[in-house]
Length: 217
Image (cartoon, rainbow, N blue to C red; front, side):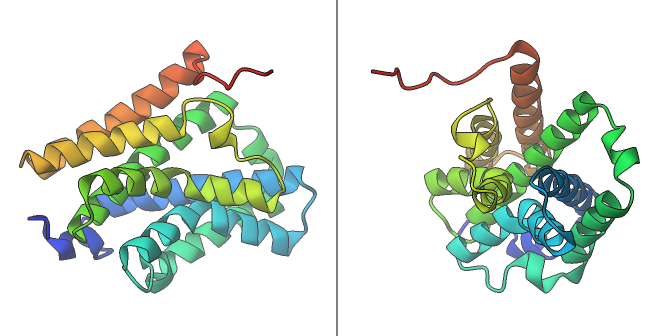
């Protein structure tokens, strides 16, 4: 078992600032899911389902894989409420949301990605998961919801074909895992992991970086 305090990582109100950012990321991803539902011409129920899956799917998958049952997003009703609130906001007031510049949404998404990747890796370590798998759990936490969204829309998941997205989440999670295994202070390590993920994602969009594709034959 890691030397991390398990209760500090898993209790929803152990860190009010982290919780606030977590909720903010949940709202951003929920709005993204609702926007994807609108593009897919889904009804209100479909919008709600897609928003919930996008915002919380990655964390739920991680918790089930590491044995944290029931998942935190199910135990704490506020996560679901925020996801549904984002879906309703998009459904009822689409114009203000569409008025947000794509660059702003991308930056918010990158911030949420960094936070979720860091939190996912920390929680996996706290449950005694091997460091290598903990990095993967951080990546799953960050990109799992978007992958579920794309699958529900019958699309090839974006993280598998474009942009440095999952790679950024894995990089941020790796910083956290290495730092904690070296017994560095938890807060600076978490901040560093989030910054690495955030900057890698933003710079990759700015510079149009992509991973190499399999050459066509």
